[in-house]
Length: 128
Image 1 (cartoon, rainbow, N blue to C red):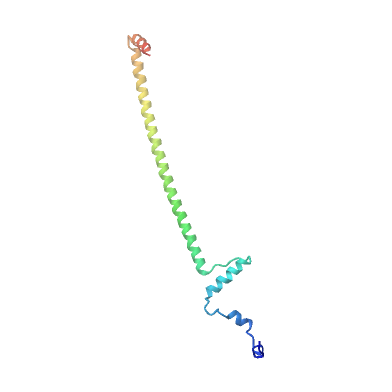
Image 2: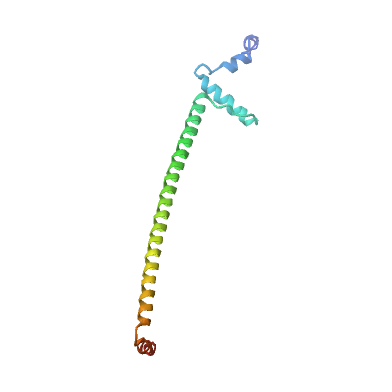
């Protein structure tokens, strides 16, 4: 080392810190600051675009949930209608079968009261 280099002023710490930062944007420095805070255990503060993205994502999630709930309501309504239709059909079939049973009972009662039924009933019993 020569004496001239020792006598020249040394770059200050500000010169080292500012070197190469002219091309950085504010978002670059913000994201670096936020990530370094995160590494130190501090809460990370999202940027405006990240907040907008997150708000959009939350809105989309809410919209999808509402759509899913609406589809579920429609499906439940269809299921209740099918159930009601099936119940109505079974009640109608039950009514029809009861009417048929009553008709057959009355026919049987009429047949029993006829003369010569004892011979027919004996013949039916022998067939079984």
